[in-house]
Image 1 (tube, rainbow, N blue to C red):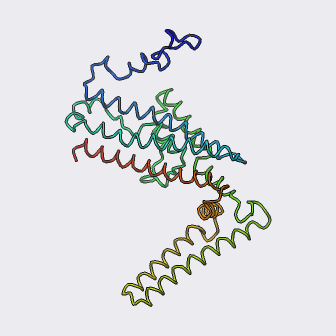
Image 2 (image 1 turned 90 degrees about the horizontal axis):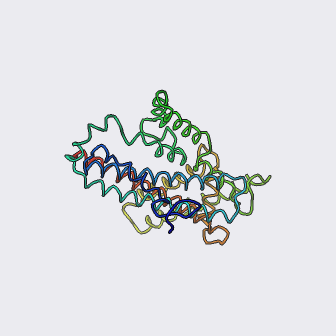
Image 3 (image 1 turned 30 degrees about the horizontal axis):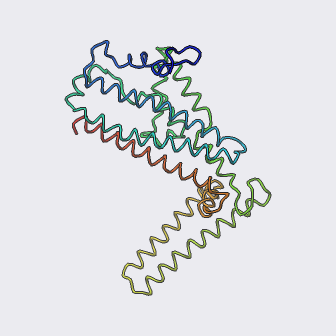
Length: 307
């Protein structure tokens, strides 16, 4: 590497802006090793949040297109895979923070005042970007409400509020995903075709009928074998069938997006469905990695608080 950052002739430190980055941990105000550790862990989270937002925005923008090119799906899968690995890394990162004892945390806790991780606007941004609705949050919390209050007293917080409101005004990744999967050709029928409703209805009804028959036949075999729990098994099969109906026909009407998902899963070995199926699997893996990250976060908080 070169000795200066002019005209692309960078040094390692220039390229990463290390002098500026390494001045952000509070050493100038004499923080303790424990507090510096606390700061670095959370700054690292925020850097990863920035990357998560970038990756998820790319996926959202790909799927939000009226026509998604086939060669764009692998790119979306790559972005999702990277995001999943980031969350897995962040879940393990909590173990580093767990080396901070409750006593060590209390030594500088008062200096934090009312500051809380709940004020992480980047975390709220990627939640909104993903499509987490207010009604699905604890107590129906509005994640932007805190920033509306802060924006009244600070230009910086006003800019943050504007950013969050801009993200909230656009389609979420969840909405874009549903839009994309709802256009899945089903039994050769395209969404919007005159006969599409009829074709999709036939497909779903045939699936539900087969699903119901499999359960009934299994219950009858158990009864024929003299199984003592055959009646309870029949009830479980019936409940499973009702669950399938509720999923495919929310509010009593067929969801084409869910029908598309079922079709992709049912014919996942077909070459044309390989990448759509891989994308859906990547979404599931992302959700699982986020759940583990949140669980690790909750456990770490309990530990540091001495519970």
